[in-house]
Image (cartoon, rainbow, N blue to C red):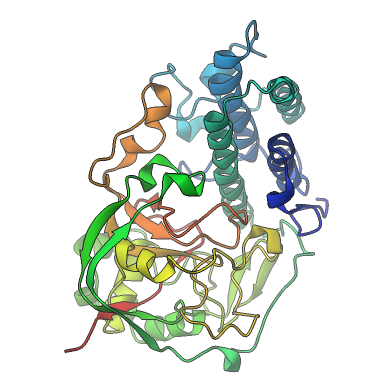
Length: 429
């Protein structure tokens, strides 16, 4: 394996980029993610929920070919008509597709061919950018879509490497950023007034996904939110107190899942609760870092054990709406949650970056939501069932990708994402 990867030096400030420059930067970031990997690493699929890195590289190129080049470049000829079947993800309007659990069987086309496919797509998109005919809305959607897959590439390859008995590191040169447990801020509660509030994205503020709209009113009762995420040490106390043995603090589905899957600790933790597998290989558990790789069920059980609850997504957004979306993202190059290194006492801290924070809100449509016409209308709306919302981004989310209104969503049993929690509770009398 090589030693390349995302770094602050490799990724320029997006605010100074033209659209063509931003396109090149986002596409290059994907290449940098796979640079430390072997061709064999890029083919493996370790579970149905994850996809091989090679598939991510091809699918994000297919997205630009399908929705930008075929529709808006006169006379464009597809690179390979078979790729429409191989690299379609879930767009039924486009046509049939290869089964998701079998993406790891696609040894052909090989990685070199996929990279040639990417170069072909880039060349033709550049032509659209040069003559100014690239539709801004589709281009921006494609770039944000690729950034979502950049995060998935890192979470998926982490799962792949964790399944190898050698526990190989993705990269060993990531900055560690560790701090002692004595430096973690004590958990404190911040109060927020209730009343009629607005949540959702404002279209005039720049790009957003359709599931962040329309902006609408919600009624909130007064509530309190923890000043920071739950830490590894706090979650370890939950385990040692018998948290995985007490059905009264678990949702029924969560208890059944935990028992059926023999969950006894977060994904990637050792049985002794003292180490965890990371993208840098197996490392000593940092007690002060935010706990991650929790399912919704585990996050909810911890909150009940702690005498609290998870925040709703409206409560989370209210707390985050006036704060800059800055924090420990992928561009900081740590690729693992870190304790707060900046001495930031402006709580609530670490709302953005480090770990996605589970909320108690089901992923459903906002009042008045209407999906886009055509195949792109399948992007988000069709998944608004049986999933929960997460907020804030993680240590492998590209910087600048998320905002206070951003809605991530996963099934409640999912653990392979960098997902953690922040406690909330109703305000006292």
